[in-house]
Length: 266
Length: 286
Image (cartoon, rainbow over all chains, first blue to last red):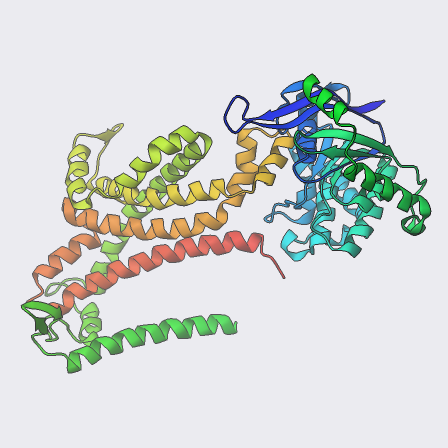
């Protein structure tokens, strides 16, 4: 099963104007069901744009994009994905529980089912005791966990995350990485994860997609095979080998001929 | 509890301070005031211009005219009469302001086109506007119910009250972060549900300051409206009537003015109470 399929996807902002920007060009990418794929690259490489295209928050300019076998717009309307951003973006006037209930509410889920599902999700992220709290009463890490619970509340087959741990301290970050992997394994969710941290990408992913700017494009896809993750994984030789590979791919410019060929194709 | 006590203490102290300043100026100020190059810069301090505080308070207990109702009752009645215009004007103004804000938020074009006129509306002098509204009122009726003079006053109050709400709510409706809007978009929520679930709740911090301003504006509008349309029965009318008697009975006009001020305070307190009730429902216990 394919969760997300992109072929020949390009995005141009302000097309035809003086400030035209080619944000993405010639992107081919397939995410299989249950896979964890990270997008990594320097700022301006279009990784967030790519995520927003998948989420149908912005329309694509060229190419085709399907989510769960449907066009992106249909997938969004069917709530085929959950999304989390760098900021938790919780509604401060709602309790934690009601924040997690929000996507269910908008889907028309009944009150009782809503509460049950939201409580289940809070249990999953370890915040069951904070259901009645308001976001302002939680730490940044806890807020981010609520945001993840909210993204998962509709049991989406796909989870889109835009640097969700970017604003957190290293300890919280590593703990949440483990929690995220556990949750994804438990729910069988496919994930596209935008990050600019190489260790984070390697630790979390089955595949790391390396991107490069001007114009934004995929330059390399690195398969990571570390088996089930544990504390020891972070010290393992395979982990460091993966980091080295990704770092090289980020630094080493691929053959310029292929890049210009992609531009021409896009 | 201690906070409330301090609040009451502060209010009483402020009142006493005001009275002390008044009496203090009376004690040291010249009866003719002070003039600089023929322009009076300090008010006259004699008893007909600035009656003693106690005289004003005492005047509340005395009858309005010989053998009539005590003046506190007359002023209270007038304030209640004006309160109706204030309440109706405030309500209508709030609804109009809210609808304008929602429409302006929804359509950029409307915001660009309408906002300058909304601001312009407040620069029209009320004194010029009031007779016009009163004149229209004479030709109107609500179904079989004839137009009453207090309705013209309420219209003027609404004219002033809608403005802070339209401007404040517009800011409030624009206040959600881009990420919150994207989130709603990702949930496939349309305009209406984004309004109800996100924009309106997010704008409450802007709503209550706007409502307070609107409340004060409605009181000013109603009092000035009564004066300039010559509507009988309200506290604005009393201010005018009593000021004509100021030479013979200087304390009297101050009773009406204090009544108008208390009316403003009462309206502000009502808005405050509404805010308190709403916040209690969602209080953050840090």
